[in-house]
Amino acid sequence: MTTDPAPATERCGFVAIVGAPNAGKSTLLNRLTGAKLSIVSPKAQTTRFRVLGILMRRVAGTSSQLLLVDTPGIFKPRRKLDRAMVAAAWTGAEDADITLLLVDSQKGLTDGVRAIAERLRTTRRRTWLVLNKTDAVERGQLLPLTKALAELLPFEHVYMVSARKGDGLDDLLDALALALPESPFLYPEDDLTDLPDRLLAAELVREQIFLQTQEEIPYSCTVETESFQERPDGSVRIEATVYVSRAGHKAILIGENGSRIKEIGQKARHGLSALLERPCHLFLNVKERAGWDEEGARLRAIGLENLD
Image 1 (cartoon, rainbow, N blue to C red):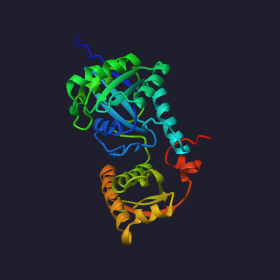
Image 2 (tube, rainbow, N blue to C red; image 1 turned 90 degrees about the horizontal axis):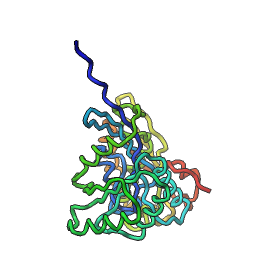
Image 3 (tube, one colour; image 1 turned 180 degrees about the vertical axis):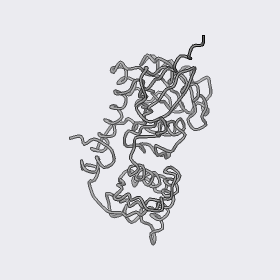
Image 4 (tube, helix red, strand yellow; image 1 turned 90 degrees about the vertical axis):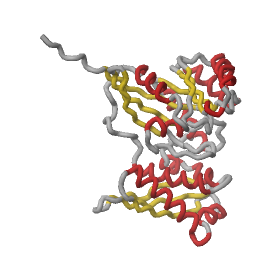
């Protein structure tokens, strides 16, 4: 008599990645999922809203669907936009089954990291410490940093990784896959994210603005997809508007004879075509709109809640 093998256990849950600006949260999400879901730049405060990456992981007879949530960096807000970004980050942490506190091991225990750890302690949620960029730090510096952080917040586990190089990520993923609650999957197994293509298009344009412009310009603009049309040949035609706060910023963004905005559009189009796996035709327009970062409609358009 033969018996059927026991069915594989299914697990599913949300894992929030929180931390100070520029800790490497978006790099970690993209590396774990193997897809360009969250935009990345060397500048802080690049991510503005919650980005969900969906990852399947099979470990020791267990099939797990990890719902990885990249959140905006947590900082002291000034504008309505800032307040909405920070609120999105904390909502992601409070709704998660497991929270990863990602710390830049090169910067160590900054005031910002200390404030985040103290806030997480009050939530009493399952929290793991992930020290990032450990490939650039002497090993002898990591133990004192871990001890100092553990005195602020009792961590369930501690991992040392390099999101850029991929060091330590397999161990982290295996542990997460086994630590999530038993649950049926919430998304189809071949999904990568729940973000609409229109929002992904706007974000890839905004990434190029971060990479190709300097100082305050990336922080004083937003991008909205106005039109996203499927074409009979399988390609897609996208029209997006870049809103800037000042006339001077508009001139810089457009560039001489439109050279800057053309370059931004070309590179964003290449990235979007690769992500959507089909040809994309991208057309950009730049408009001045003073005070857009205090408008509820603009915040909703980029995936943030309007906070009064």
